[in-house]
Image (tube, rainbow, N blue to C red; front, side, top):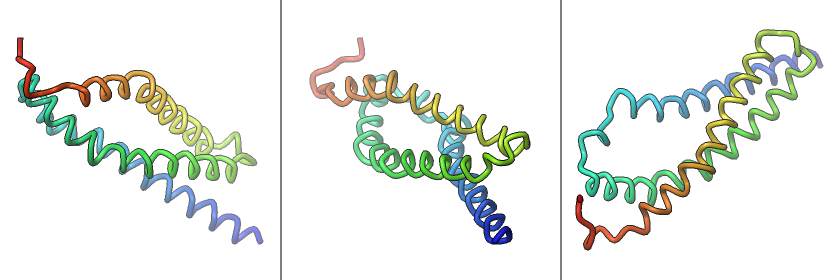
Length: 126
């Protein structure tokens, strides 16, 4: 039974590692390839309408809840080892993810809604 438990722990640890890697990879991509900084405000609004209208809702609808559930399960699997570095790093990673989700809901989603409401045909860059 202990062997099965250790296997399940490793499986969830690897799973959360892959998901965090995907999540961080999306953020890292914007840092190494900051296309948005080369756009005019109107081009950026047009670009963001496309991203927010297609990619982001799908990503957040799947990635956010999946990461929360897998984080919760993984943390619960390691709670007996609460003094271990693994548990500490799980908690820190979860806290960073929760802060990012909080920022997204509090700051980013209102900006997205504003950009999506813009009528790009009648707006000027001034």
